[in-house]
Image 1: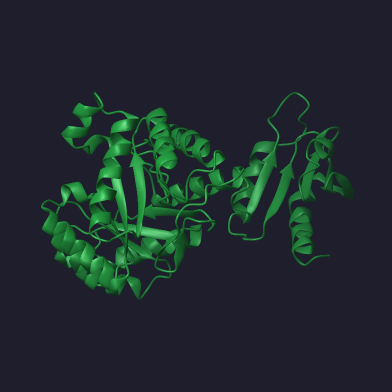
Image 2: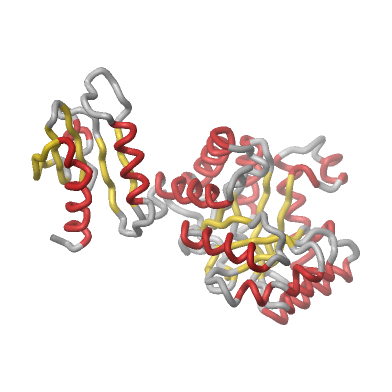
Length: 353
């Protein structure tokens, strides 16, 4: 797929837009001023592959905590600001790498100008975050409801305000909890503007519902070349957001890092305890960074042939295990030794043997 070549900006050291890799981000759910808890959560997110982290700045104590947080983590930080322009300025002075604001709810133009001036002084980017649940009434009236057009043109209006102040260090999100509405809003905006896009389906829910809604919405847009950074918004541990976001990118070959498991659905031909075996392999390989496709198949007869694209794979049944590489059988082992043998072959593969 061909990605749209959007304007490139930076959040700290991370490029957003252009042909930069699509970054995956999340948001902490700790009390920001509780530095110890916040840093602990961010370190867990870093380990899971988080590229950017956002946290709420609700008062001046939260803003003052920013330097203490930053000195203990490795990824750029974004302050989420609601209404109070003074918190945006305080965050900028405290070393934040990016702001998420809706200029329309900051208030008077002079307040927005104060925020813009601080961002210009410290080299900070702004995400213009438009949400279907907080549109200005004038857009709802003009476009006869909360529609993709209302969301899109609301964002363009906010951008116009920033541009009039000489500020273009911008990325944009147009989020709705409705998947189709989000897709159409992002498509429309992408056709009208070259600013980089932060993708998300807001308030998507928890568990399976949230994963499916986010995967369908974000996957559709990414497959069309739209999107420069993303957050999967789940009612769950933020680490799950990172895992799902990275898997969405992997499924579209937009992220070539870590292990991809290929495993067949079980059927009457399955002669091996496939489900627990897959779970064990996933757990053992979840921290690996080497790009690797591993197949775990349930049928000795069809397994290697159906998983020819896998770098390595295993299958078994009736006491015998097979290990194959690119569809070719390379070892036969007792079925009970399959897992250990697979790990050995992965080590050989990583060493180029």
